[in-house]
Length: 189
Ligand SMILES: CC(C)(COP(=O)(O)OP(=O)(O)OC[C@H]1O[C@@H](n2cnc3c(N)ncnc32)[C@H](O)[C@@H]1OP(=O)(O)O)[C@@H](O)C(=O)NCCC(=O)NCCS
Image 1 (cartoon, rainbow, N blue to C red):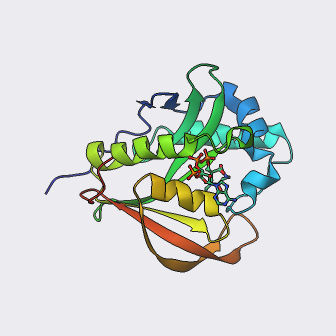
Image 2 (cartoon, rainbow, N blue to C red):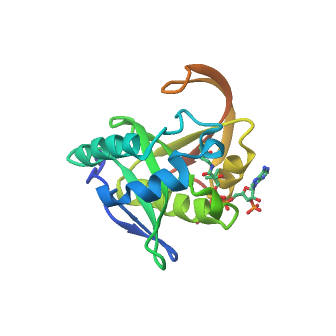
């Protein structure tokens, strides 16, 4: 049986963006563009950072985790400005089932320009066609309609509504929509 090829956070590219590992010098962009922003955190399992020092602590951990070949966490970098304008994260990897989950965040000042869709399509393509995952799922808070739109536009299929506990935050239970992307799905990208 074909095995997963987990090579850590390898660099990917789309027409407008580079997806690469985070670096310590990204702290300002990350903090300013989403980790300090209440609207970005609103429907998600993380709390806004109270200062850039907190962001630096997280960033230092992320950089440490890059030693692991199953740690996939991309910075989305604008090719023109070189600014870090978002992130894509892979979680809950089940190696034998070839299953994982994906999440993403884009800087508020750039919402509704198709950016999340563009990077999600590339990440799904990488995860299924290059790393060998059979199924990639994503969950969004039912009120986070924009995220649902992104999943649909990237070729993911709605599966069901699901109650989910959001840890890291206030451990609250939220109603989510579950989407999945199958390696051999019928939606050509
Ligand atoms: C969700 C998020 C990633 C979308 O990023 P983005 O780059 O703006 O996404 P896109 O531009 O590719 O697509 C957004 C779509 O949502 C639609 N949309 C935006 N706000 C909406 C709203 N309130 N209601 C319905 N649709 C909405 C846009 O019109 C667009 O669809 P369209 O292309 O059919 O017009 C961004 O809002 C974000 O980072 N939010 C905070 C973090 C987050 O919630 N991440 C997802 C976790 S599941």
